[in-house]
Length: 268
Image (cartoon, rainbow, N blue to C red; front, top):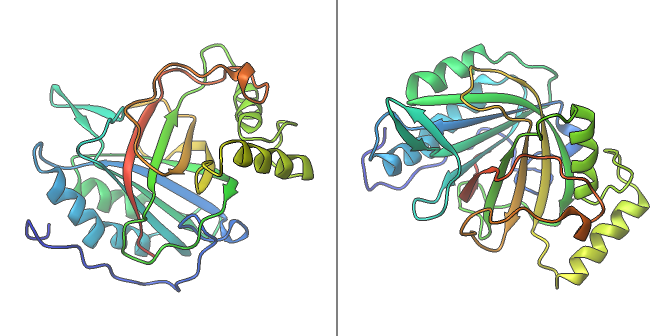
């Protein structure tokens, strides 16, 4: 790990070209992987987070074939975190979430999982299918924290509901009123109207990541990651929203969801 108190030095290994939202353009993403990382030792979160930024994220990107985007979110040490993992008899907060996209389909993951698990106290990962609901953000500078805060809602579908029910209602929640992934004129109109109603405070990007399969042993059951860029951190998930006051979706996820929030960095 880097020496405590030193700033991370970011190493660029891919072209500085993305699709907004700190990621490659959607048409360039054939595979996407996500991991939660917890440091080896309690009480050393800051040191581990610097190490993730300085070295581990870069190493992961190099080990995934066809990498075209690497992004890291660091849990803010003073903010609410619902992402807890039981390790050695205690609950530890997730320190970082790593997201890697590739232009290749169904990439191998054993090499990157070995490096991550060898350098962290706990690792769990998933292969996901991303859908960009909204992305009005410009590409953030490499290695600098984004001026907005990232909220990762880690959700699990309601007990007794099918995967199809979960996916359809999550799309409706995002403004796709037909429950389908494909964007439409109606979708664009709904999203624009919601942004106008909230004075433009609709977040800079919102990406729905549906879990296709776990790629490591996992401590949680996870069906999706809602990736949302906001103007600030929140004190907690609060009470369940009323879907009928939204876009007509039925409740589809367990509540409260796990939440990781903090600064996000585009590594490559």
